[in-house]
Image (cartoon, rainbow, N blue to C red; front, top):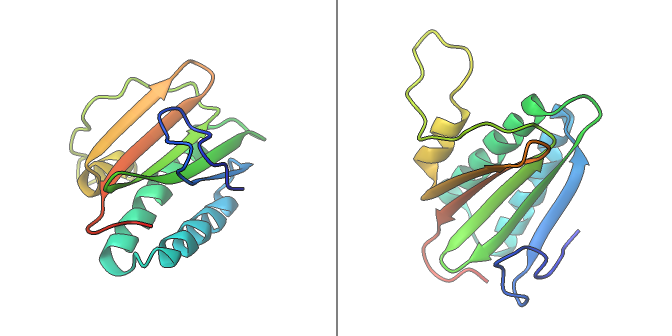
Length: 145
């Protein structure tokens, strides 16, 4: 679903893509596919497209892990200046975000936000105890239509 100007701080002329789905791992491919098509329509391909797909997948995977059974999550993306903004909100209770620390070599979990930080210019986590939103800004070269 495309919701023009439905996000705070977004110019009403901007296109915001918003996909609400169950917070289930099976939905990750659907979300990635929708972003891939949106990027292709804007001629964003190659390594930059791969980076954006990884960022969204990591954020959405965290939402799946943090959400209770039968919960929903909403993935959104839009252009903001020279950045593609990727955002996912979920039913998780949230966490206090600080710059992520390196994960030990034997850890099986905990690398997601490290990856997002490495591939993004800015990362923001907001939570109100009922919903958590993780948003990442990633610069792209050249104009984004």
